[in-house]
Length: 340
Image (tube, rainbow, N blue to C red; front, side):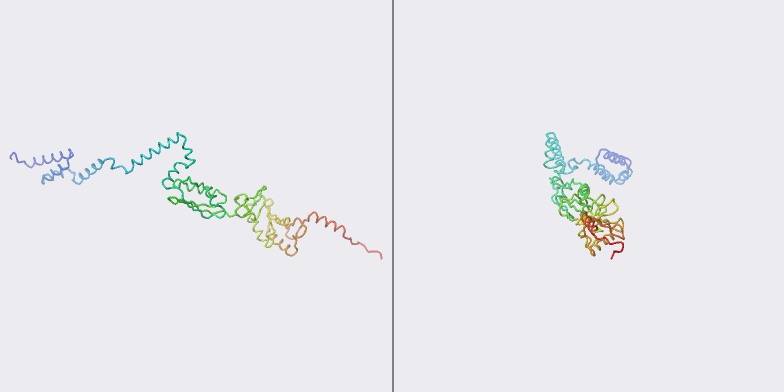
């Protein structure tokens, strides 16, 4: 063996040392070149090492990705955003120290609402549907909607709760339509009757809910019920009006007595006392008496229909006095025979 000639063992040792030396020194090109120049023996050495070339390539790629500059790994525009946020915090802090934050709120509303409006998330359009008795301004005031509110920070559930707390509103639906529209759908309670209690008149719904005090002439001709809990039984009174037929127009109010029965007040001041049961039949009988005998044209104060087989009336004082005088002047029939 000459000095320029290497045996198989020496060649394997040198190739292996160069291979591992390149790997340890971080020289992938050198290691790969050495393996390529080593022939079969070098290939066997690479297999013996147990590190395939593909794995080494992946490991070096991952190491290269770690070494990317930090400006390439951060989102674009992050610096500008942080700068704006810094100046915004400084500005708010200075405004708070200077006492300007209260005047800002009074003029523009809360800062987060003002910022949302600034980027186009204000409330430019409000659509209200389902209103009949309420006005748009009343709905907006009840919902708390103003030009200082933004759509982004508006709590739709809270707006719905506020609207449904209004007695006139039975149901409410609130939808936010981005970027700047709000949709409100209402189901109103319909004014059903008037309720007089403790000298005050209230507008009530069919379920007895008090809508408001009577301050609108539009509701002045609604049926009137009087007495404690009469609002909860207003449907009964309207059923009596239906049973009255043509006499309905002469009935002015229904008074609930002790929560058990109704009295009717007529337009001529006559009180009609109805039974606890069978009130509708008694009202129909009153209509028949008026049609056949014109009973309401008599000088009477009260008609008592609580007994199903009779009608009791109470005369006015003048009528009672006139009747008493008439009975006194009426000649008496002799009891026995007369002299001839």
